[in-house]
Length: 111
Image (cartoon, rainbow, N blue to C red; front, side, top):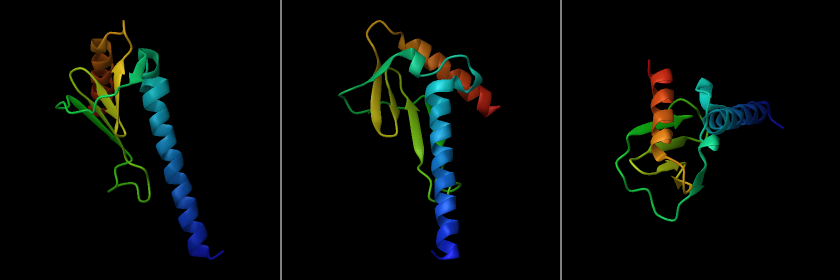
């Protein structure tokens, strides 16, 4: 295998690992906030996300991560979209708590 091809493969693997780690942080570890989206009991929704977003998180932006997978998370007034898939809270789950979590993450990284 050519040296440049090996280098490109290593870079692509590193970018993919970065994508997985960032998405894991968002979904499972809560990014130091004590809770996560996984704890908030969201489920895929049938409808398309058409709301104006309140918070937008972009992980692995294309202009910064070459050959990476850009992940966009949009939080609307009643649902959210992760990488093009709309999610809503399960019955009995407060969406306000999800927005509070997003606000906390936004404040943590935005300041």
